[in-house]
Image 1 (cartoon, helix red, strand yellow):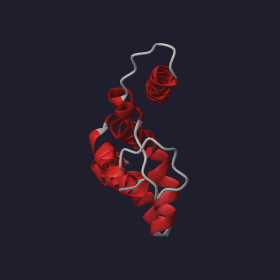
Image 2 (cartoon, rainbow, N blue to C red):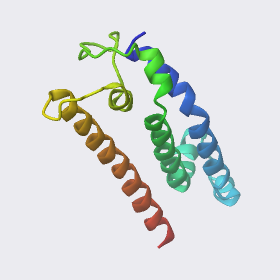
Image 3 (cartoon, one colour):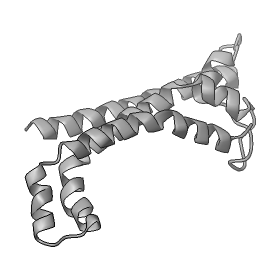
Length: 146
């Protein structure tokens, strides 16, 4: 029950989403461009770095953004595997608590208490991270359409 095990489980959880978007964006590369690299004598690495990546980076970015959103939204797996510890972790092998679980589990009756203030601080941080992801997605899609 540590941060490392929760990170591994979340990476296994979000990898199908990323792989799906990566494979779809790789399939959208024009076959004529791939044939041109073969005709010029390019190897597989050159084909990947000079043709496939420039054509598919927008789809890859979309997959990364959506996977990041899925990892942020999945609270229960991280809560159950990371240990749900209130103490600040010193390493990735220590237990921790997710921000959304912290907001749900804290019962603050006193409005001037530090616990009540940490609920709002966690909520503000989650809002900023979610807004950053949405702005990044909209910015990348806006450039794609123009």
